[in-house]
Image 1 (cartoon, rainbow, N blue to C red):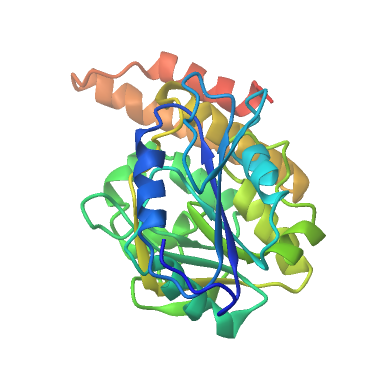
Image 2: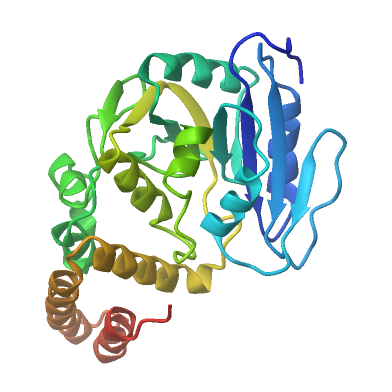
Length: 304
């Protein structure tokens, strides 16, 4: 990593890790190849991974005793920060050689703020990384499987909570930015208690940003800077939907719309079952009753 110590505001990079170490090792190599004019500290938080993350020169590797999820891992890594800025990076992202300098420079006029770059899928397709604060209606629309084939339309993206103004190249305040890459002043992060560790996976970043917004700290999408996000590399695909629903229910309870959300999702499940029954009668390989039971279990079962 090329840097000139003391020139500019330093950054403490936290990389939560669980599972296959290969993506995180690739990211560490990207971080070590950065051309940057400021101090950079890097910590990898091994969240009790079954394959422990190896020691690397110049990187602080912290091994947690138990797996607490994304927010817990980030809080652990942030605790040792002596830099004014904290940058959270998913272990499955890849960054170019000037990413850190570009992001910090672009973020400076907005500070104090939470800043997120444009996220690109592995094939270069932009992801929807600027979002509106979640509402029950967003999640109900997303739950309605008959609408899935229309979700390439701008209206449907807005209906599920995507801020369609937040495209590569644009720079603007948004309600929140996706947590695959978050830059935030360390002092601000600590002032609100960091991530709520009651979330295991998903929604912890929007909960943090909503608390920060209440404290007068905005979120800003900086689409002039980008990284590549593979997505899902450190989570179990079989558990992912359950974690997502559980976290959204927790968020809805915290922000006062959980009853509305459960009612809306239950109604959407009923409509899904009707549509799936028609598809089954038309010879499609669907199981309407089993699908409805699983959806209702996710809505009303609650695992956390």
